[in-house]
Amino acid sequence: MSIELNDFDSSRAVASDRKHVWHHITQHKPYEQNDPMVIVEGQGMRVRDAKGNEYLDAVSGGVWTVNVGYGREKIADAVREQLVKMNYFAQSAGNIPAALFAEKLIEKMPGLSRVYYSNSGSEANEKAFKIVRQISQKKYGGKKYKILFRERDYHGTTITALSATGQFERKNQYGPFTPGFVEFPHCCEYRSQFGEVRDYGERAALEMEKVILTEGPDTIGAVCLEPITAGGGVITPPVGYWEKIQEICKKYDILLHIDEVVCGLGRTGTWFGYQHYGIKPDIVTMAKGVASGYAAISCTVTTEEVFEAFKDDPSDRMGYFRDISTFGGCTAGPAAALANMEIIEEEGLLENAAQMGEYLLGRLRQLQDKYQVIGDVRGKGLFCGLELVQDRETREPVEESLPIAIAADCMKQGVIIGRTNRSFEKFNNTLCLSPALIATQDDIDQIVDALDNAFARLAPNA
Ligand SMILES: Cc1ncc(COP(=O)(O)O)c(C=O)c1O
Image (cartoon, rainbow, N blue to C red):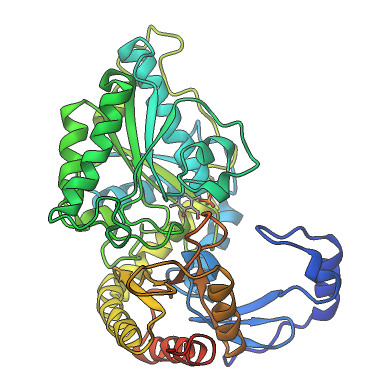
């Protein structure tokens, strides 16, 4: 990285962090002995920490977020210009960047027409759940209030978003949960629950129908699904899965809510993950890549039909969407999102994600040929996972200590990779890669070479 460290006392920042900051998803005991990592600079694909170590970031800010890479002056300038002109007014009124971004976003999402702004992926999903619950009251006498979700999917950190999450360890100790959320089985073919079946995709989708029939179709308002499961182990859907899911939703008048918090804004090589599979969603939520982390913004996007349900009877005092989020849509978020989307277009980053994604997948498959421990390689675009097993025949997952050690080894080599993080009782065994959409072949080679070295040291073939 050619940039200089900022002129501030980074060792003081590390000490202050150690003393006062409570990090996300982190056991702090080790910080009694060691310093936490404090990231101080970023440029392109690379970040630097307070101690001057430089890393190639293969997970876009740790959690698949910084889609256009670090140091984007265009976005920073757009945000600054907007803030000095008009920083904030509640979203009960409109503002210019929110209007312009909504228009641009809707151009990319045929069939959808309304954008509701908030601040995080969890919040965007909460809005969707509230929309479904209110439609149930308005149209079905409160009966169609249940929301289905899938085992291994993650939909957020708040109690209700966790209630809709199919990850046992993620949820553990945070209950009781919101009633009315019902789980159905996952669709990971490598972990087939039905033995070897020919039409696995259709078979897995029928598991959803079984749950619908058990619960009663007239009690189910919506199903909430990731197009490709992210934190649950980068699970790409099997052939035929989405066609069947869509058909079942239609059959029982169930709204289809797609959670694009990870896949949205180019991660998989199309604007949205669902666009690979011909899905026609009723509600789509998005966050992380919307402004690539330059500002906090999330969106809940709906069809005109869903929106109509909230304005068809103005005489009903309770009939409109009575939801508010102080910071949602005002104004740095949409200003950043507009510039972010322009960068993706101007630099052809969808095409790059598709091409480099193929290259990455190919190189990971070569690694799989080399190391027995890599049981499965999955992915789409710049979004890949490697599932690690003790034995290729039995597919017994490795203990979570191995992916932790491999990630630590890569870190020592200057490459930050991701992994399933204490989400399941047994399957915390997937390494995750999601480099920025600007990744070059050289960047990908550096990532895969680091993995190769780590496997050679920690999981050589017996
Ligand atoms: C698929 C998915 N949905 C929702 C969320 C929650 O987003 P946030 O952390 O912005 O609340 C995440 C976060 O990782 C996610 O992966």
